[in-house]
Figure 1 (cartoon, rainbow, N blue to C red):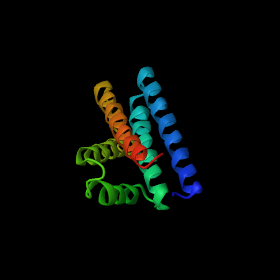
Figure 2: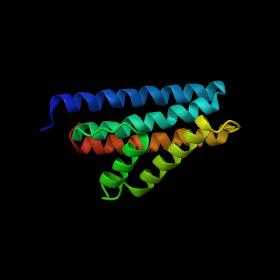
Figure 3: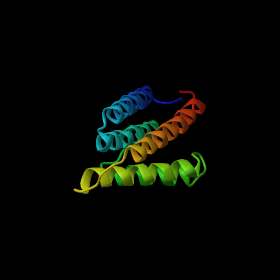
Figure 4: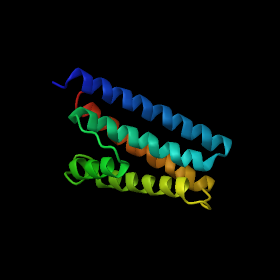
Length: 133
């Protein structure tokens, strides 16, 4: 049985994930592509952190969160490898979008990011469902 606080944190993070994905879609619709790329990544980041909450794991740096997720869930086969690759691509695009001064996100690229985010989140929801959440 999972600790109630861990479950509550997991659910809270999944709510944040859902909210961020909605904002990403709204930004896409309004033509704010860089912001949509950012929010699609954060939607996935919060979903990944929801799984870690169940273990009581947390890290200060994004790269540590993603590295742990890849090691504990993707490399072990709990989460499909393609999902792990999508998380990596989402992170790379978000970093370019946020930190490269002259990066221009296209509508097509942004749409792909949102599709990838939806697929990653769906896989995480499936995992959580198998865990009884």
